[in-house]
Amino acid sequence: MEGDRTRIMDLKEGLRNISISGRVLEAGEPKMVETKRGPATLSEAVIGDESGRVKVTLWGSHAGTLKEGEAVKIEGAWTTSYRGKVQVNVGRESTIERVESDEVPQASDIPEEMPEASIGASARGSRIGEAASEASEAVATSPAGAAVGGGSSLG
View 1 (tube, rainbow, N blue to C red):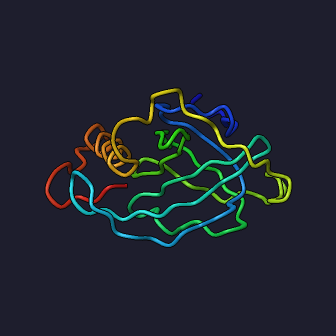
View 2: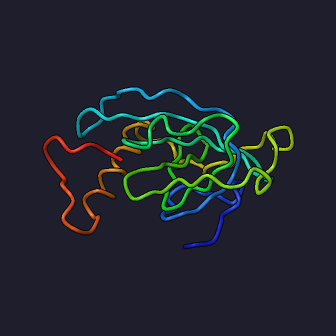
């Protein structure tokens, strides 16, 4: 799926390096949370395309960067699940690009459906813990000797 846009309703938990495009339907303010690896900054948003909508967690420097109504393309994201729903995570290796408004549907044309997680996939751990763990793995495996321990921030 590298380089190709994935339709939101085709998302499944456990995907890596995904690319989605859509309209920002909701955008929350950044907040500090405690994770297994210490404090982290995140914000949450909902993005929709012609197939449905998905909750997006933006970590670290991406937190708070989306605004309601924007048309965006997100690349290098990964998916997790929480309470039976697939979620997209945007971290350090991810990029967010503004695109032309006519490249994505208007908010009123976006279906309410959200991608479902596989049965039992979300039975363990909290959403924040799972995503922080994923974000930490992305940091730990990133090239160029990215800092992994101590006070490094996620995303």
